[in-house]
Length: 220
Image (tube, rainbow, N blue to C red; front, side, top):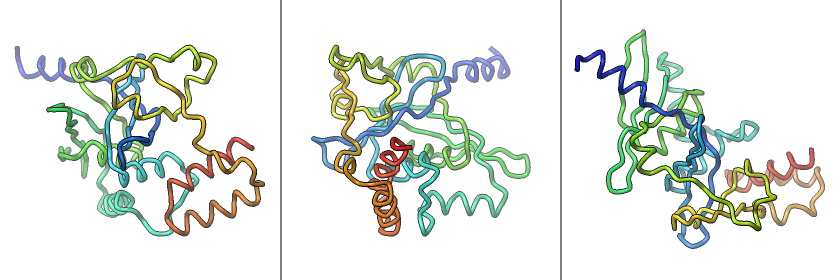
């Protein structure tokens, strides 16, 4: 097989992913699961990430939350913009002992460079550059799962982004929808919610800010 044929085969085996949501583990302290969904299929790719990376990804997903000072990934974006570096795409290219390895495909002055990165960092940057996220079909075949809903959840919205992470980490076939993400805020008025949102952003409590924004969005 020549180089061009090999390259074509590798490109054709790429599967595009989108972010379905992030969930917090109730049993594993500080553990979050980032759930990626194949664009043209039903399989999900769960990736365990740290609290800081989960917060950074959540902020990038919630466009209306603007930190008063740039976070690390925002700083990287600002730095790249200043020097005309563009992130073209992110590829989750390897899975070893449960750890996902990713590459960031960058371009500057029409020259492409490949940068090794942790998957959580790569995805946080992909969001900020509006860059697509891919993995290889072989990785999705190995680590992708079909999330089945229990009978008590069948009437719930399957597009809900909050999935109980403990079910994912245990590789259970039954997944529940977390509907309590904004519990405790339902009794507040819109004005009070907005004040709490401003306060959370000022204190850089972005996890709380995201929940408040969800509650505000529900009211609107």
